[in-house]
Structure formats: C-alpha cells, structure tokens
Length: 439
Image (cartoon, rainbow, N blue to C red; front, side):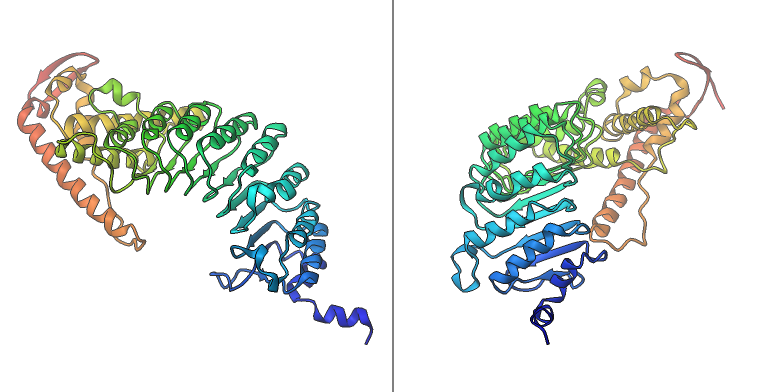
C-alpha cells in the first residue's frame, strides 16, 4: 500500500468530506472535547497539529460550507498536551480567511486575550467574505478586538444580519464605538446580542440614540440580558417611542433597573392617561422581558398602580403581536395600507382597554359618534380565544390569561351598560349629528 493511500485511510471521515468538497456537508462544529447536544450535529475534534493544518487547508478550498462553529475549552492555549499553541491556531485562522462560502461563523469560549482573535482572523475574513451574514464571538475577552471589529464595519459595508458579542466584557465606550460603526454600515443588522457584558447608562444611551431612534435602523431583536443597566432603561424607552422595527427587547437579569426605569419601559408600549398618549405609544414591540426584581425609587410604592402597569404592558404587547383573524385589512394589498390598518386596530384596542375595560370613561363615551357605539361594545366583548390543543411551555400561562381576560371584559361590559343604558338604544344618523329612536 502506498504512503498516500495509508495517509488517506487515517484521515477522519469528516475531514475527508471537507477535502472532497462534499455538497451535503454545509455545517460543521469544531470541538475541543465532548460531544454536541444535538445528535444530528456534524462535528470534528482535531487530534493533533497535523489535523489542524489539514482542517485549515480543507476549509480554505471548500465552496459548500455555509456554517462553521468553533467551540474550544477555556485556557486552550496553555494546554500543551493538546498542541493548541497560538502559532497553530493562527495558522488555522490564516487558512480560514481564504474561505468565501461561509455565511455563519461562530467562536465560543476561545481564550484569546486583547482581541487577538479579531486582529489575526476576523478582520481579514470580514474583508474577504462578502457572504457572511452571522457572526458570533462569545465567552471571551475581546479587549481591543471590539474596536477593531468596529473599524472594519466602518470601513467596509458588510452583509451582517446577526451579531452576537455576549460575555465579551464589553463596556460603554466600546458599545458606543460599535453602534457608530453599525450606523455607518447601512444599518442592515437585524439582531444584536450583548448578553452578560458591563453595559450601563452610557451604553444604553448609545444604543437608543444611534440605533433605536434612527428611522433607517431595521434592528428587530435586541438582547441586553445580565448587564448593569440602571437609568439606561429610561434611555431605551425614549429611543423606542418612535421605533417602527424592534419587536423583541430582552432585559432579564438587569437588577440595577429601578422602578422608575421599569415604569418608563411599560409606558413605552402604552402610555394610558389619555388617548393622545396612547396614539403616540410604541405599537411595534411584541416581546419585552424585564428583571423579576427591581430597585424601589420610593419608600412607599403604589402597589395597585404597579399591578395595573404590568397588566397594561402584558395586554399591549399582545395587541402589538396582533391576531390576523381579528384584523380586517382592506382588499388592497398595498403594504402601507395594511400597516396603517394594523396600527389603527392596535390603537383602538389599547384605547378600549384603558378607557372602557380598566375604567369606565363616561366623558369619552359621550364624545363618540353614534355609529361607533356598536363597534365599542364589540371591542369590549372581544375576548381572547384560547386554543385548547396547544401543548407548548406557555400554554398554561396563556390559558390562565384568556380566562381572566374573559372575566375582566364580561365585568366591564356589565358595568358599562349599567352606567350608560342609552347605549342599548338605536342610534340613527351619521357623524356627530345623531338622534335617538327607542327600539
């Protein structure tokens, strides 16, 4: 048997498929140890220096690989028994830079200090690969690497739609530079994950003013879990007031958020004192998660007001998510008209909720044209229908909400008819000029 045949027989099957440019191998996970959680995941563990060299060469020439995840154990560089020296990995990253087919690239737990990962690999990779849409670099100390990433984003437009820099020790100033870079990169990013960093008020101000308040920003998911956000919550709520794209904002674990910041975020989706404030609220945000415990800003908090604000937020987010069965769009398929109709429907639901279900606003009722009163009664009684066949993890919570919603609307309808018996009379006429005619 020849030397080439012997060498080929010892090559790992996954590595061999990479070398052969197998069209069915589009996703690969590189592990230092252990096995992936999903059995269907295709993974490879380099055993020695030669494996790393062959792996880099195979990826460099491969044209079918779309997703690459690299997950190494911490302090890998110092584990000489595994032969993971900076020189070896640097040589691998140099080969990786030559690949132009990868669209999703993920580095997890790679222990490289002072942004060495970005300076040696990602900067050149981003310059060469115009197809990259998803970049994840988590659980590592980026240091100057975050600023280097911002520099490349500023210098050259990319196709990035998803960016994850969670647990990278990102601070406010680095976040500000990153936001400016994303703004100059045509604001095409759809999802930004910054969980577990050291972001405070300054970072939130940068995100709110540079991204959220920018009408050209199409970001629809922002994850800021487990940071040190305090007054930054108010800055985020201000940035969301006129935002038309963000649908998900996750703030779990930010225990520094005070009750004032919590209420400011709640008022963002529905500021209920009057109709004008409701109209000017955010009608796009669909998911908002807040820390379970917040710092009280006053010694004596209004418990009833807090409960009402939380319930208001819960209802408003559901209205923003919308139910296609409840929203009547015109026959015109024009996107602008559909958007306006949906926005009007959401606003109407919020007005009915706060002025005729939570309260009975007789003054507002008397200002309504007669032809709108049947619609008002219908909106009050329009309770949420629960699908009993559901079995997901939110099923029981949604079922309980639906039951309480039905009881709440039934009580409000009874109270409203009792206080305003004239609504049961037939209104004849149109517009504001009406006359009564008893049935």
